[in-house]
Length: 356
Image (tube, rainbow, N blue to C red; front, side, top):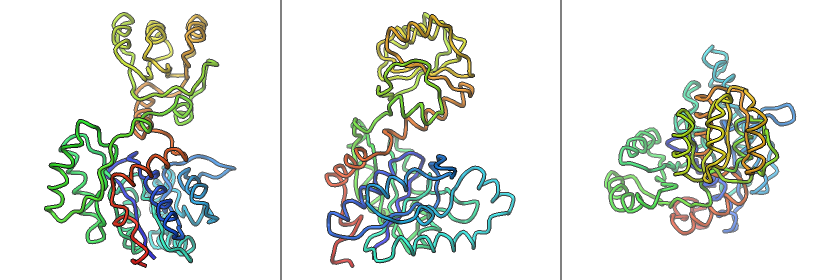
């Protein structure tokens, strides 16, 4: 049996789509596949329980019948972390629980893909970083990394150092066109000279960039104030903190943007609704706009979302969502599967039949 742990240098790097797509590639080669995410971090409440959405998607797309408590033994919520800080979580007990879950999902399986936590270091408060997980589960590790500037290599080296001799290699994801040649011609050779295999350089795929207004509203817990369609895509965020006249000039120079501003800034609301590149308006502080703004939104077809939190908190959460790209779904995994087939060394990532 081959076991591969997919970890990452940061949040929202595409781990889930990569992990499930690799599982599907293994299935296409006739191998039985298991999946688990020992530390659930992408949480939502389902039928009275807090669960990670990624294992649920994996169970559906990989067509497994494993139990959720086996696929996700630890719910790594803020409540759990606080409990760990207070000394109420025992690392040995957690390790036993994770190992039991792994034994269940790996039974009679030829390939098991293990998805790491939010980033490589997640789980450190209970001595269960992804490096610790690899040792516990006897897994090889692929480090997924974004790349925008040369300083990003520091994060790659830190993660690689934490993995040690279990490293299978590094996989760069969502590399923009402007940086692609630099990664292939400069960064990859640098890493290879240090004995670090680069198993793929995946280009940024426009179809996976941005999120829909509906997905953004769901992630923010926002209330829609209009009946406008919410299938528009948001790729960037703008904060309305200037005068209305300045805002209009600013907003008109962008596209596929969400404007985040206080619910009492009617001048910003009006400017945003007049700009063709604004996909939606997000109002913070729980302040509903006047009926004139809602009427204009109805006429222009721009959805307005209302958030209870302040502007900074809402912006930070929205940035996490948008930077993560398209919400994980079957189409996302299909596209990622094609990218892996075209730009990655699948034999090195999932092994071949002769490895078994």
